[in-house]
Image 1 (cartoon, protein in one colour):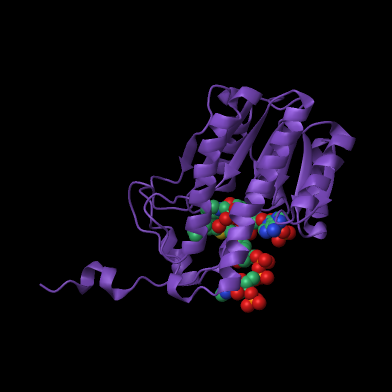
Image 2: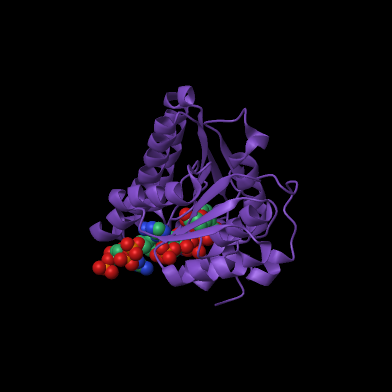
Length: 286
Ligand SMILES: CCC/C=C/C(=O)SCCNC(=O)CCNC(=O)[C@H](O)C(C)(C)COP(=O)([O-])OP(=O)([O-])OC[C@H]1O[C@@H](n2cnc3c(N)ncnc32)[C@H](O)[C@@H]1OP(=O)([O-])[O-]
Ligand SMILES: NC(=O)C1=CN([C@@H]2O[C@H](COP(=O)(O)OP(=O)(O)OC[C@H]3O[C@@H](n4cnc5c(N)ncnc54)[C@H](OP(=O)(O)O)[C@@H]3O)[C@@H](O)[C@H]2O)C=CC1
């Protein structure tokens, strides 16, 4: 554990921007809920009145999140799975149906990558990142939509992606996967509109979470200088946006990508590995 991110007491001391009871009577499913943004989202959903479904691979971390949000008296279901397994995803939605009925809001937050020059990414690593971020998110989206269709009702999906518009040097696999999720979300926002299903994406810039531990500390320090606000974003800044976009406050919004990135999509480069000399301004000859 480093200084990145917020612990449960720090999250509990903050106040969501949305009104109390915003999610009352609704079930919010969050993947990657054992850590980082997902854990922050679990706090936010519980505080806003939702029944909360916590998913991820490591059950101990999910149980820990469940214990932490116990302070808000929410109804909580812990369900470990890998989103890469479509049958496990079907079982998840069956477990949710048995406990709460249909989920109302599905937040696809689980994901990740490792920093590597694109030219060096091994095939297994490429597949791991694509299968998790694109394939896993798709399994979740499709199963949610099928359940809503079969129940004759709509729902809302929020996909947590990344700022892909100007490329992501050092994480080409995730850039490809997240751009895929964005294109997929826009496509099914059209196809599934008749079913009453909304799909939106939230693209975080660099956010202080324990997920930052996979990056070289020098690269992480440099990351704080890659947006016009010259700082990391914080978990609560993403949680407020995801809850806004997932819930009824945004009911006329679909197929949207909301960037919460301190302006990184318009300014600042975002190397997750050492920036080659070629790109360093001070390497330009007079
Ligand atoms: C970018 C800026 C914005 C975003 C910030 C964030 O998202 S922050 C927060 C985001 N949070 C995170 O990013 C969470 C941390 N990331 C992860 O957990 C993984 O990157 C993951 C997403 C691939 C996990 O999928 P998994 O459990 O299925 O994977 P696995 O462990 O079984 O590995 C499969 C294969 O991948 C390869 N490979 C893996 N690591 C490295 C490496 N360091 N080096 C080189 N290669 C690596 C290797 O080929 C390995 O196979 P091997 O050689 O072992 O047989
Ligand atoms: N922090 C940042 O700056 C940014 C983050 N993001 C994205 O936001 C999301 C959350 O990131 P953050 O909280 O920072 O990082 P974390 O690493 O803390 O969170 C990733 C979560 O995904 C879960 N997960 C990974 N693989 C799977 C899988 N196959 N099935 C189910 N769950 C899985 C992990 O849990 P477990 O290991 O238990 O399965 C973990 O809880 C990620 O998708 C990340 O890439 C995007 C842009 C910037």
